[in-house]
Each structure stands twice: as structure tokens, then as C-alpha cells.
Image (cartoon, rainbow, N blue to C red; front, side, top):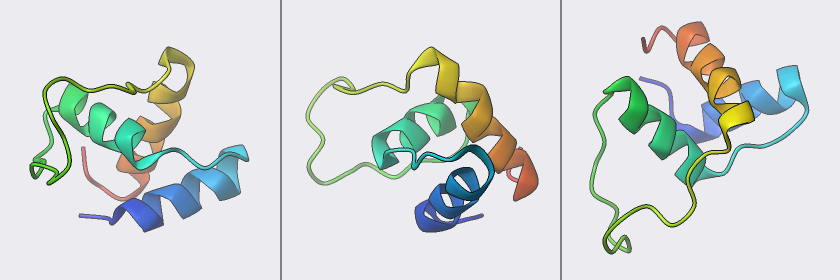
Length: 67
């Protein structure tokens, strides 16, 4: 499984923006990938991934054979 830094570097190189770690976690949640509980997270996700960025992050998951 790729690290968040690897996913961020791939997306930045291919699409020109750096996804927030909370966006990556949200998309992992959508895809049913395993997540660890963040020590600082309370309740629901405050900053979900924007709909136009979801498919781009999923592309990174495919690149790293995560899906």
C-alpha cells in the first residue's frame, strides 16, 4: 500500500495539485480501503474530498495497485 506522501507526489506530478491527506482518507473510505483511526479526529469528517478530485485520487490508487 502506498503512503500518503507517495500518493500526493503522484497526483502533483500528473495533475498539478497536492491532495490534502483528509481527502485521501475520504476517498480510501469511499473505496472501502483500510483506514486507521486518526488520533485527532472527532466525529464526522470535516473536510471531505471535493467531487471533482475523487476520480483523480482513485487514479493514483490504481497506479499503486491499491484498488
